[in-house]
Image (tube, rainbow, N blue to C red; front, side, top):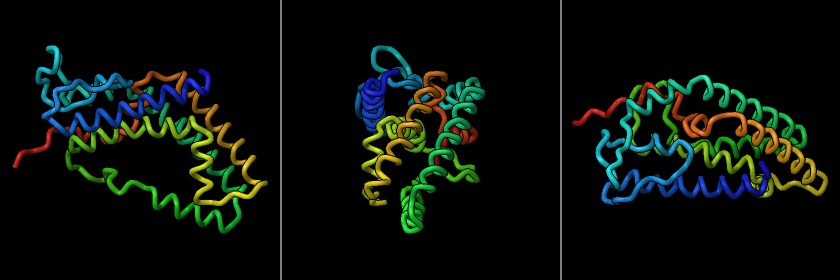
Length: 208
C-alpha cells in the first residue's frame, strides 16, 4: 500500500468516523452511518428499521462479532503495542533528559480522561461505544502521516537540527511497520480493537 494512498484513505475514514459519531448521538437525523471498516457494527438501536429498510445491529450482535474476531483482534492489539513500544524506546534514546520529562508530561496530558476504566462494570454509553470504535481510525492516521506526527512532537519537544532527521526516520520505520500490519489483518480487527477489552460492558444500560 503506497503511503500517500494510505494517508488519503485513512483521512476519509477518520472524517467518516467523526461524522458517524454525530449521527449516533442525534436520533433526529435520518441518515445512514458512513461506510467505514467495521461500520456495519455501529449503532445501538435494538435492530430498529433504518433508512432504506435496513437495521442497526444490537449490542449483543456487536459483542458476538468481537468474540468471533477475537483471535485477529488480539494479534492486532499485541502487534500495535510492540510497534509503539519500540518507537517510544528508540525516541527516548534520542531525547535529552529535559525532553524526556516533557514527553512524559505530554503522555499524561493526552491520556483521555473519558476512557472507560477497566475495573468498571457499568454498561458503556452509546457515546463511549462510538468513541472506542472511532479511536483506532484516528490512531491509524497518526501512525501513517509522518510529517503530521513529527510536527506534533516538535511543538512540545523542540527538536534540534540533529534530532529532526533521526525522529523522522523513527516515524518512517513506525509507519512502515504499521502499514505491513494493517495489510495483514481484517479491517474490523482494527475498528473493534478498542472495544474488545470492554466487551463485557456492551450490555444494555438499565433505564431508571
